[in-house]
Length: 315
Image (cartoon, rainbow, N blue to C red; front, side, top):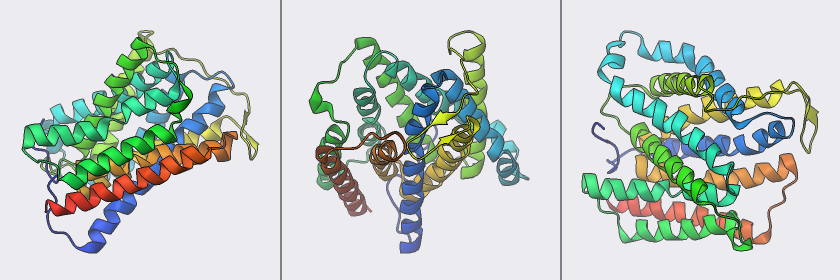
C-alpha cells in the first residue's frame, strides 16, 4: 500500500473540517439505509448476491460520467495506481460486502456487524504500528466508549448466536472495511475522490460478477412488490435507492470525507452507520429500537466526539 496520507491532521480551516464531518455523516447515514432496504427485498426472494451485485453495478454506472470528468487529462493515474485500485475494488468494495453477507448467512446480524465494525480500532492499530502515529489517551478512550455503545446499539446483551464460520467471514469483512478507510484517505495517489469511487465500484462489480458466474455468489431475484412500513413499492424502487443512494452517494462522500478528516477520524464517524441503520429499520420495517439501543447510540456519538478531539490534540 502506498503512503497513507492525511492521517495526522494538518492545520485546516474550520469550514474544511466541518465539511469533512458533514460528508462523513452523509456517508454513514446513507450506508445505514442499505440494510433495511435490503430486508424488504429479502422477503420477496432476492438473494444477498443479487442485491449486492445490482447495488454495486448501479452505483458504478451512476458514477461513470463523474469518473470520466474527474480523470480527464489524467488517465495515466489509472496505470500508475492500478495496484491500489485493484485492492480497493476487490478487497474494500467487493470483498467487504461478500464476506459480510456470507457472515450473516451463518450467524446473527448483530454480532456480524459488531465484528466488522472493529475496523476503526484496526485503523488506529495500523497507523500506530506501521506509521508510528500513536493514538492519544483521549482517542483510546473514545474508541472504548464507541465500542460499548455499539454493543448496546446492536443489542448483544440478549444472547445472540455465534458460529465460528460466521466469525471468520465477519473478520474478513473487517479487513475489507479497514482497507476502505485507509485507501480512501490516501491523498498521495493523485486520484480524485470521485475517480477512486467510480473505478473502485467498477472493479468491485466485475469481481462480484465473476463470483456470480462461478456459482460462489447465489443469484436469485424477484419482480414482486416490496412491502415497507410506510408503503408497498415496486421492486425497482429499493433497488435504485440501494445503487444510487447507499452505494454511489455513500462511497463518493465517504472517500471525500476521508481525504479531509484522515482515515482514523473518518472510520470512527462511520460508526454512526450503525445508529442510522437502527433508525431506518424502525421507520421502514417496524423494528423499534429500545431504550438500551438509544443509549448506545448516544455513547457512539460521544465516542466519535472524543476521537475527534483526541485527533486534534495530535495536530
